[in-house]
Length: 133
Length: 133
Length: 133
Image (tube, rainbow over all chains, first blue to last red; front, side):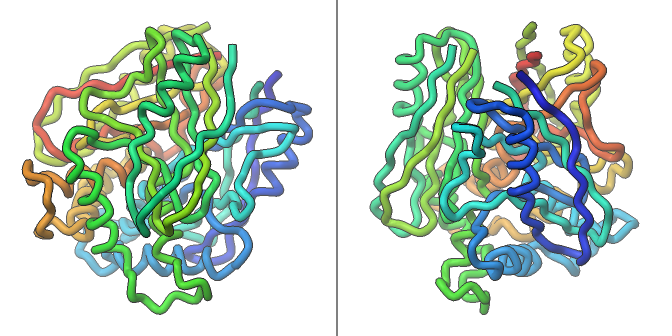
């Protein structure tokens, strides 16, 4: 069994983490796959995917704050578009994630949420997924 | 063929890298899978998974030192628990890893070891695995 | 269906990002796999894999520059070989990547390229791949 497709995410800020856990779980539920894996892939060069705390919304804003503190925003990069820090953050977070599925549920930890990381928004973005047994 | 389950790790320090290579290889051996993949997933929000040098133990302490140097430990984050740097380090290392299996062995490079990264210990932690052909 | 093997990469600089997109696509094409996944694994401890912009070559040099700015190059690390910053960069970029395949093509975004990250070259390096349905 296999289900693949794309999810849409509309971001509203220049940099933000958007919780996509329930959107991804919906696809897992629709797939009728009980035991398997869910692969997520971000096709954008100034965005990424990460997993972190979902309970306190301050954690997601603190992650952005932390990245903005140590990635050198003011450094004289060569890339003419001026968004090299956004590209660096994208590589730091990563483009692909693999999450296990059991009992038809993404096996995230108690405090975990799946985040789409926007580093050069606001934009309309997509995320690829593939759910298999 | 498929084998999945959880490994337990007990960490002893606030931040440390623990070599889990032989624990994971044991599961690969028990699975009787000769050619395939091993997916590892960390379900914690202040921990991560990484692969790095296993020969010199100084490398794993240097990775912690390096992260503590550039992730802003003293920054006024909002998350009330005060462990935002630990959450940031978790996202920098990542939550999932996929390692290839050939001849019944994890295909790690000569100098590589698999590490569980503790960023807010000491704690009892778990790691999910799924080994498939 | 499955195809696995190794790719060779010869790096020329101490630190650089090398575009391996077409090398990996060649293996996908030879595999005759139309729908599936491509797993890449880097077996080196001072190198990594990342996905970022392929259009402007300044982005890949800016990523190296950015990492060299915030990873503490001059910090008194303990590892005697003196290349701890290279090990840290390896863990920041990550050792494994999973890319989806559709219509016989890696489903990279319009601006994305697959990069091998050399952090302690020049050297002869290898990358493991496994392409499956």
